[in-house]
Length: 296
Image 1: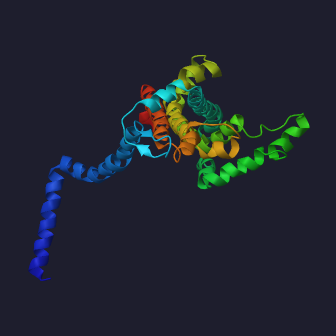
Image 2 (image 1 turned 180 degrees about the vertical axis):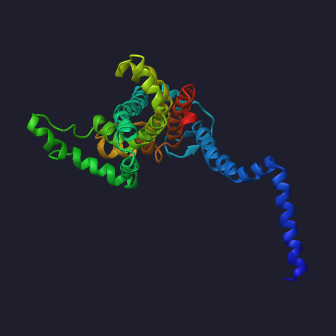
């Protein structure tokens, strides 16, 4: 390449950079084009295919998918008691995990953000994040060993004349709570860390007791962060299908029912798969009113 060609190339680059600098909207559009295309084609496109295939049917003799439009799958979801029970049970498990996570996370986050010495707070946050570094399956199978007959849970409760919960719905809630608890602790920790100390001092100076300070000052300011954490715990629990297979015993949730229907009845599996999507969208709209989305 000659010096003239190199100079011309640099000039073109500088002109292009200058044009982008003068047009911030064009620069933003070019930056967002690739990720938006990825989102539209792969994510939203797959959801569209899922929704469309839920209106197809299956040949009862060959189990082949028949691309004939029908609402039979959704009618069966609404009218079959087993499917209704599975859907309600799945939503109940997701809500239970969210509530338990919030109850456990708040005192832990308060300690790490307001009570612990400042030099120890980063280490405590790292300790909270440490379980996320381990494999999902390793953690679930570890809980399977803990909850098994004669396992650690039985050994710890035996002196009190009790036994572990074994496998089933309580084991599923307990394991999911352990898995998603850090996602609840971190938003609450951040909100409590940013809470101005002078508000707590002013509340105490005005004669408010600890509970009144918590209810009137702390909770309203931290509630959006609790709602933000609940988005993670609720959605992750609602869509999980591996944990319930490992520690759930005979319990059936939406995820593993979808998994079991993929080979036998793909349109019904697609119809079941739309249920968590709709529930999560409704949940996000409800949480949006609390300001949770801005706390993510």
